[in-house]
Amino acid sequence: MNTYSLRRYRKYLLPMGCMALLTWLSALGCGVHLASAWRTFGTSIGYFSGLLVPDWSAFSDLWGPALNSIFISVVGTFGGAVISLFFGLAAASNIAPPWLRQCTRFLLSLERALPEIVIVLFLVAAFGMGPSSGVLALVIGSIGMLGKLFADAIEELDMGSLDAIKAVGANRLQVMVYGVWHQIVPTVVSYTLLRFEWSIRLSVALGAVGAGGIGLELNRSFQLLDYHRCCSALILVLVIIVLSERGSEYLRKKVNVGGTLK
Image: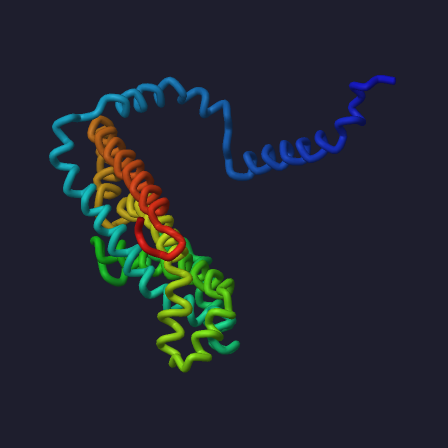
């Protein structure tokens, strides 16, 4: 018996063959031709080689837009997180009535269906180019993401502690503060910092379409074929992303079970 028979690997070969066929048909449908890409490979190497040598004199001009991107991310994320708390309460089945929960969940799902890049295009058309459009886009995007995550966290609360607080005569506000808020503080901090990391990346993409910041400088450098300046902007983007990830990771580790910092 041939242990290396194709029948033995049929359950692996069939999905791989279907995926290969689907990839080939998709490439034909969207006009991707490897032959033409290979012919322009030499020219592309010349362009990309410019991205390996930064323009050191450009860093003094790029620090301002880089900080602007950070400020846009901070305002958009933490402003959206505050609003998301109210949406999370309204979307939690153990807090809000069914009609309010269903309406809020529908609005949150509707927002998540729209990428931030589409939202900022509407905002740029309505309010013009600038950081305000980027901040509003990040606020709206944060509400869609954090609102759902906060609602799910609230629905997983220990209802016994809430009933105990109600039993000693606490009003609704006290129940929210001492029963709900104290339990979800670590989750709120963790999800907000995670969203901040994502907003840093988004601020670069949103800046390229009119929201300002380092993304706008990156887009201008590409349009002007100034690849050395573009390399400098990319270095700053990488530094910002790495620092934001390390900072948020440090803060998440510092948050203990009680929701305070160690």
